Length: 417
Image (cartoon, helix red, strand yellow):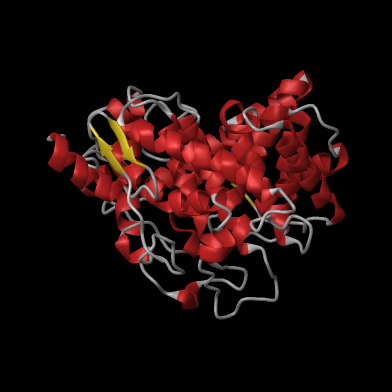
């Protein structure tokens, strides 16, 4: 597949086809004498997220996602079928949503954001049209429970921008697809939260919702809290990043919606948020001085998605007082540079199976190309305006870098909430 081009001049959009931000940089610098797009942290994030999301949503908007998206599977891939496309769309939507929710402007970033947003809205309409070649599978197998939830999470994170502009037919089709997920029950694990957040989204838009399923998820995660900001994923604790991939963000956002509808849930929401903040403190310290983190546990091919909880706490501007938002930005920028380099994209900017490169053998039995777009979840702070402290603060070393450089840093101690 040939990579098309998008060119932006100082005066505006010159051609609109396939939006490669790296070619934009060179073209702008050459034609307008502008500073190279990608020269600061925010531009690194924008370049990388756009590069990741554009192939998905430009193809979905043109009804060519199934035609053009490569499908690479783990060598141990199980028998699930026709799920990878919903995985790509839902997971990436959850990551790009806060950025797309920013208002339009005439900056180079703003033009990329607007173009991507338009493709997302058009693409979602195609995704739930049964007559469209890119109609996504919500109805068969269990996996759609997972990725329907990420799609719902995207709508929660940018309701005014991504849900409200949809036409009534598309909204009703989405509601129908979300409710169709009820024909299958989630497993007794983090999967309970996939059902919970989808049902919470339905509640938030005034639809009937499955309160019993949500209550069950909340009861189980009360039982599965093991302390110091960590939940067990089911009865048995697993040392991996599922507290970040799924548990904290979806539990907190489910409770937030419930609290908005029932003041009696406010205390449970605040406790869950407090635990997520504690966990995010630990995630920030897990990032090494070099901007790496241990490749531990299942689903390590989700790459930077392991940082979602930290990213969400930063987005909501709830970082602990002793953690400067700028140090989190610097840490996550280095992680992004290390993990989402050219080596993890193919020639058409689709992610490939692996961690720092193409290594299909480390992919789990449930992993295919679409699964990899959990990596977008570390980009949530792009939803903060560039004037925010997170983006405008001077560069600062993160905790482990301070510690190993003989600088002062705050001691750690477990919490009892």
